[in-house]
Image (cartoon, rainbow, N blue to C red):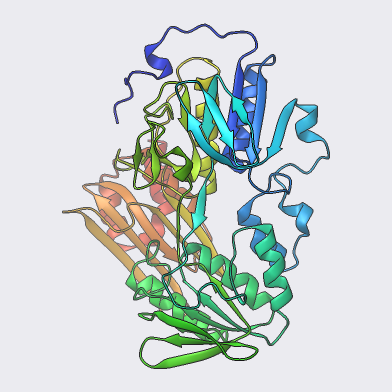
Length: 433
């Protein structure tokens, strides 16, 4: 979308009004950072943050650490100091927004009543998708999305318990790590032809699958759950190919969708269920912004707009949105470098930027299958635009620097084509030259 659209701060010479009321729907990282940024920029404003769970604002990404007993529930909280939000005069409301009246600037709550706003930030994140499978609503089936889900999983994850995990994507693999730590007998079912198919190429995903197998995890790729049946205690999970597994607990990590259904009919433009925003994080309706997993944000590499469901992006979105909501200058979002780093039972994998490559681009690959080490670099001309790595922990941060810096590598491209491990030397040469 064009940054100069009607309704964004770049087009209006607005004056900050004393007593401005900012309402944030969503109490995750995007919402919390936005609320705190607004408080710094606008000390006199009224700020309310509406979250749909009874717990204090927390990080979903911390739930696996809770499951593996590395932290307690308080360790998942985004702000650890008691009274943090009261101290900053940020009202936290536990309720769900049913609908938005953009004409009268009101939110209607499912608990009853309405909340008015001057500026609104939608930071409601994602909600899990349940696969269309018979028996998916059985009491022994759960998501791993909320603290309440985590409590249910903890009750069903005694050492040696048989657990089935549906989905080996990014979220699924984070959960996998915690389940292995809990000592369960784990089966993972992934419909794609490899693990983490939206992050890793075929070679990298296959190596990760073999690694998990050697650690005692039964991974089935190119497989689908066809039904979940009550077996008088455990459940029977029927899998394509005539296979079946008995499980005391089934965890679904089959994907997510943007949590913006309450905006339907409001006039706010949606694309595949997510809020369409410009570079100011402003929606199609003036005064309404969106941030995080619910927003179609700008991709740094391509310039296109899409949902980028990673916490650093949510935080960036929230900060940019808050600046523009407070009329603190016209702040644009440069776009997020897509980056994922995953620890799967001690094996680190990562993806950066356009890791799948670009048309007409070159690829450099180095693999040591026995050592579970892999690096793949993607080039557009003599610029590095993306990468996959596995089993590499040194210097991988400079890959992001090379991608984000859009450096012309010159003769260093040929050197990286011959030896992709020279990324640090290449970065030092081109960034300081």
